[in-house]
Image (cartoon, rainbow, N blue to C red; front, side):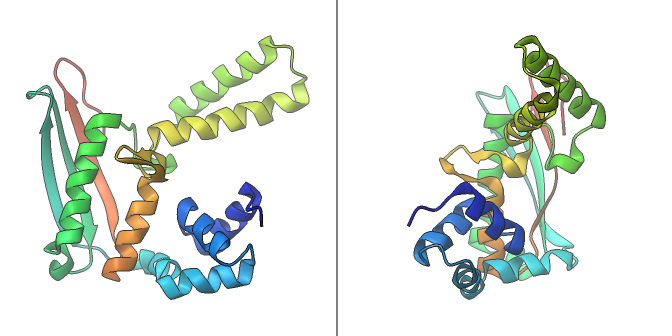
Length: 201
């Protein structure tokens, strides 16, 4: 059975699980939505999302220096217990995340973290571009919205494709770690320095 992006989107909205996991669940269950939800619950991914409200006060701050000292990253990732903070899977995630940030230079962790003036400016540019091509006014906003979503995927850390495996997003990796540890794990903050440039976090 053909798994459509609309089906993946619906399952994602119902479970808050990453896109790749939703797609895999639908493929596994031949597109049956309820079975796909059950499948994700059995894997523990949907349950992991429910932990998102729990306090995460433990964790790790990790620094990574790249390109002969020309790029530096510090990232803080939090979890609920010291036991998980010392877990190898948690440590690997944080280290890989720091390397990813060095490579991709995200502007924010998620959409909420982006400055509103940046979003407004991008949307205005996309609207102007669509108008210039002669598109009717009633679909200009839809085109701008589509381009804005692509912009989010490029600059929001959690939505970025993972540099080591571009088929999955950072959010998918985070959800896998939550399922594996059974804890709420959150990316708290990061800062990236590049020689001769202003830092962004």
